[in-house]
Length: 332
Image (spheres, rainbow, N blue to C red):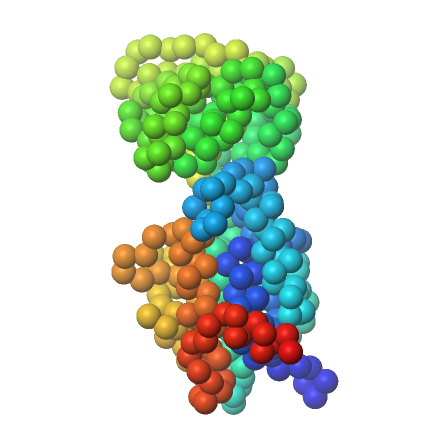
């Protein structure tokens, strides 16, 4: 270990909140290490919906996910943090005044840790219909990477949450026809988005669910949708089917680190501290009473976690300083 650096703060997770955490830690003149299991920074925004608009980030009426990630990454690089991608943290041990952080490829060392791992590992909830799997390499989609791939196509979207509605609205001016089906009468999405949907040209079918799919090779050609608790069945001709049923998430090895969890999330106090001194959490991975899981919330939690980590490292450090002073001091 003589040649291995002990960082002030190691950020586990390079999603939006992790990137902002790294930047703010640099402003506090902390040495920063970032670890993420994904091959690129940006978390779910970059991996699942880079072309999707995000509406709840302060200062942006709307911003595409990848554009937001690009800005955050550029900001994070201001203070040259060490960034290690394609590394999964498997174990954390406390030794004297620092932590050993074991990954699938090496060991890192850090005085404090801030976990910003989003919802953990994620897999889409799939369409539970016979033979659905054979179409996954064709026109059955669980992720949308490029909106223009659906230009002038007949698109069926399944789901009732924010993603299903956001994709419906985003594809409305691009696709030939967008049909949205949801198994309930009411949608689980932001009220404003639902209002926009109802005033759009999207064909809304509720309460309906997929009953059967037919096609040739790996291409779906028709979808039979059946009325929930009813007898009506409609046949829809399609060029693409997008399923937005949410994700199955897993905290993986994190569950073995001795950190207190509540409902698959890390429980933190008002300092963003976990039950283990020196380990903090921010973003969707953590929970406390009344927390809304939004990117904007995580951006507020990041400085709290960093400031208290800094205070733990250096008890003489001020808990909070105006950003202009921090930036000028760190860059001088």
